Length: 404
Length: 172
Image (tube, rainbow over all chains, first blue to last red; front, side, top):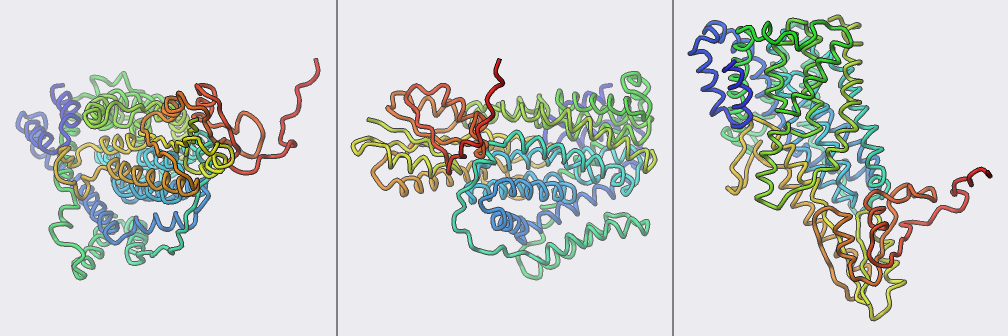
């Protein structure tokens, strides 16, 4: 239990590997998990973390090549004067970028571009910005690398990359569809206000090389999966192609490329994985098992997802994943994926979970006074229950088709 | 006499044109824009929600790579586009005016700014294809309902004709 508390409290309070890695070491040292087990866990997580690193590098190099700027120029060009069309484009881009290049790419790289594009078009930025923020959570259901929560569950649940994607495709589409319908209605006035398009006649300059590399990487995911290889190789290949090009053209340095892999973050993920394994090994499942339904029936999945969403909002989605995945794992892949639906869609109510939100608001207050988040919360109340329920139904349907 | 013109993205030209038509020559025209602080705050929050990433300490040198806070970029963009919007409005007005930029909860800031004014000019910004209450968005509705001064409410483009009027209630 002490391990659990450590896992719940510390990773949230200290946003770095600084605490998580020693925590994992303590877990191993205290005998909560045997060294071979920890090594096995690290061995299983290793390729996935390598995958994540490759994706992060790929995303950063795409940004260096101007892919996100080109996205902005394309949106500004074809959505001029039509905010509703801009919203559709933001949805398409944010969904794909979140799924393929991880939610970090959407939050850090795409959001500023979307904001700038809306401003450039003279459109009200709110609907488009909220779409980005919501989709960075909701659209992170599709692939294991889309979200850190997926990675942790993926490591503990033992489903293959392709099966994960196959089961999550339908929930991903359904959740995005709900988001779109609700946002379009919620921001109808802002979207109807139109946009005073200034004379922006420049045609978007597409970085074809980066774009084709990403498309090739996507195709690589399919091909490697079909051949029984680890899809991480495709991501590595994509990142390598762009890295070599950047180095040859001297548009980037080896230091910058290694830096964009966010090594402390990867160490943090690895440490968390070891802690999760320790929690599993120490029988938390049997201790708290009665809280979590043990089947893959629709009501059970709904219950698990709702519990996960509540926990993700009360504490934070990362600790919620750590607590719930070991509990849900015995019930099969369906229950684990239902947990992911809860922890990925749920945070749209309070972003990072209420404790983290409180912390963050304290920081913001030092800068610029208290901020009213009423509208974000109202929007979350409209979206989250509907998206979560329908996504779980879609997951249940996928389980019937693909097989649990 | 003081005329406050509420400038918002999308619908502002109609308000400026209305001010040109209706504000007396000796009136002081105030072009008012209110920056909604919530979107940038949401971007800050989304970034804060990315746990485990290298978050730089606030106030240090500009962050790079994955440590860049999109909320900062949003704030910069918003400030620039606010200046451009007010300048475009002033150019369109074509007479001396005061540019006023406020930040916060939009509808309340507008009501506060209209206090003591002789006229507030604002535009409808909802469903502009039908006559009726849906032609006012939430913030505009609040301002119309709570304005402490006379209000001139204009259509941002040609108003729908009377066929867009809802049918009368059935006779009792």
